[in-house]
Image (cartoon, rainbow, N blue to C red; front, side, top):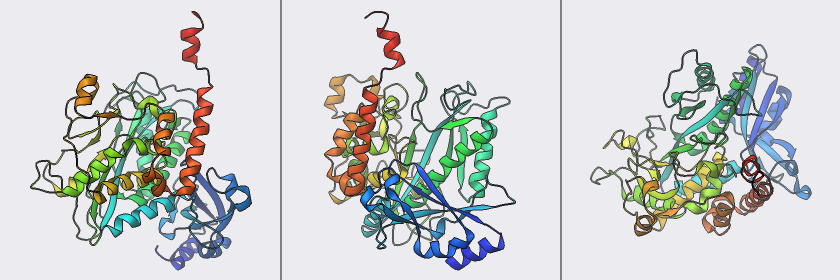
Length: 455
């Protein structure tokens, strides 16, 4: 279904009387308003008005009238709704009453960065690996299993939840590459097939909704909180990236169809790492601007409980091929294969806003290409085990240790300001500073346990 006429015909044929309009606030929370089939024709043309002042990071009270206009290419039936009374959804762009793109819309921010890439001759593909936990309840992290990486647990409730989730994803035409148990108890992962960044950002929002919906229907709770359990690995969203030539979009790095012909501009068979100059400059850009974009890719107070030594999460700003403690990794599963050549950024977590995260990741990489940044040598030894003097000798810097440091780095960033736009940049940081202030006045159970008996 590619046209308004096709959608109206489909809705009438299948007697769909409820259509959900989805959009995202600046923090990555999914929002929805539903319309009837009688309203659909008008909404497809003009959008649906709503009060932007009630959506985090959107409008002020005096400029609150804005419009959610559906992207017809995102029309899908919702598989968890009653089959007898089908419900559809479309993902929306947000506009002003004058018909201009609304500057607070995260989807618009990503579109602007995609246009920048296209002008440089590139299409940005991403393949995120989203990890999450299943718990017995939403108010206490009680695990469902004691499994670890790739474990097959007898009578595994979580395995059944994953299978049902994969089926729903496929029902919405979202290709899945693999699903498996992750390292920590009750931690799981479903990997999505590579796609262009805008389609993937939409897909991530849908994926998270389906994971939670399936768990809740069975009386469990799924969470994308980066670090819900002490002493085990947190949940990341390692994001594989590649730039394909925009003139002829081809298969992306995982083999997903992205068009006809085309080439992976990251690949150079003559280079000892099979990395082109473009790939090297892209990696260098993300390394140089890593501290600036960290508040976007790891946007919560809790995100920095994950980014600590000892749990396969990146702490130091370096790149490598096999070293999983590096911030950026160039996987070598299929060495010398053009379509498989990609760059894996390991600091994002699944609680980020994917539209904003992909925006700053792309902006940092393109900055490296435009300004011809030079890539330092890879750091293959485990960086956690290096002495401070050795890290300093190799020029290895650290990521921010908490949200406050990340905010301070982002506040100074011209790159992030331009990538997100002034509206989102200002409101996002204002919201994050409020979150930090709320956090810093809390008295935690750890403090009570440690200090109350002795002080």
